[in-house]
Image 1 (cartoon, rainbow, N blue to C red):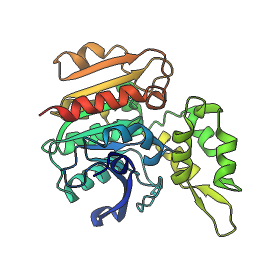
Image 2 (image 1 turned 90 degrees about the horizontal axis):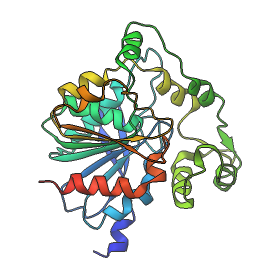
Image 3 (image 1 turned 30 degrees about the horizontal axis):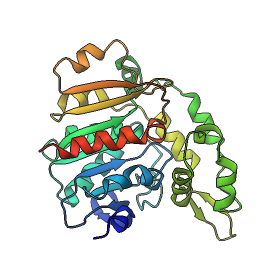
Image 4 (image 1 turned 90 degrees about the vertical axis):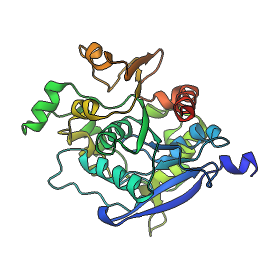
Length: 296
């Protein structure tokens, strides 16, 4: 198959009856190969936002980049009422691994996607070869304990999500509004175009609206009772963590030595990066995923 053709992602849907619908994904690379990498996006984003980052790997690896529940083109509906954690996102990912009978797979993820991946790895250790996480959301044990005890630790990101403009005249209007601004300052045109393509859907009135509703994005910020530290302990796979230098959500200060003592988990701070590390250093993302997928 022509390399250029393999680099172009194919939109697929995977039925997950136990989870109430279909998961949408972008598929890269030779479909005849077993899946090498499953990549999971950050809160409020979608798989296509990372397409230009993952495409260079498509000549050698079979990749699925998924749209999580309530994001992109996913058919898995948001369930906000009574929600306290990301265990539902974990269960969606485990269901995908089981539905496709994936084994010896690398789980890669950014932010919330990295956290969902480690939570899934702890539940399906026989299916996961390794994990590569880019500035995952890892709260301190004290904050997790407070959340699990019913004490909501609010984030300023919640109000930002709820205030987010949800409706624009067109996809092009979104691109013009976002280019070079806010979180998108470091994004290439291809990254932004990918995000907007699957991050907004057409409405009957001809305008476009966010596919990740502001209320669902906010729910992801407030639902923090999952125990990532327990998942680190129960996962048996090697884990590579790439942490942002500025504004990181990987809050492991004071825990680094315990976390990395066995050598199974490595932690690296990437100079000059923010929480949007994959967009700022796509070369590191591609290199780390390639190295992990190339391991026997």
